[in-house]
Figure (tube, rainbow, N blue to C red):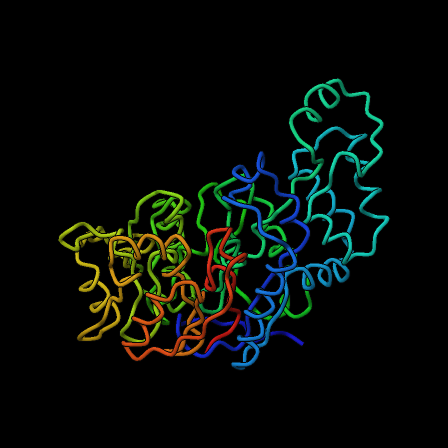
Length: 409
């Protein structure tokens, strides 16, 4: 049975969502590798799994159907009749090109049941797990000195928001910015192509992972059925936004306007949703650090031009005004992370205080550690559902980062 996949809102009722339960991949982080793998610390697996389960249960208790990336990927591979081709693609994208090594690795993976194989690809494969008989001098002299792994772990996979995102009745399967995350979107490509619940769903492919420019899902907010907000950030380029705009504006999509919002290109603010999220029809969270002292910032409004294939771009510096015009509302509230306090704001933003997940208008899931931001949202009439976060937050992502909505409304 095909899924009804459609997202035209950040805040309407969350019907179904894609998660990834943290697995052994987070235990394959070390102090020497964690920065290359985009982590600042090493989570404790039993507790991060407990916290993630608590997060999933909040979504389920509020009516959302939860799907897991690792399970869908295994089911898709089983249905593909292309298991060998898929395994070879993961090997190639792991920068393994010596034929004898690739063959040994392929044999090792094929010795497992499909679910175990998927879990192992996600977790990473150490050099000492596979008996490699290679005559390659480059392999013997270089690789084993540089890395403990034949295939690197993918510890960021529990941030399912970024590798792909549903835009209306279509999907963008993203070319990730950093090498550490490039392979993540291959799982979503496989699911969309082969999983019976996805391949016959009529899903439009707005963008695939083979493009040269990068967009990541944490930068993309679906404000309503006609308006997107996309961050120009450390992970998403202005050129990629223009390419997506041309595709959406010239297709059967409902989107007619994109607000491209420029934010600092730093790790603490890697995606738009780490500093700005929509939580109600007229309420947004915002980290004050993305605005100048007078509240100004660069917002580029993209709309279809007069001629087919053209895009009209207008620059604004008032975010509130740009949002009100785009959403056709007369007023809105920008709720500052940490109450705008000089200490609380950057501390809570670092721990994802701005990264809220709306599960219906005015109801959000947040990390419990961000109590200043949470209490302030409650003062604005927002219902806040808190989840434990001591370990989940170590990867610099919050509830929105950890979820990819499949259906809302």
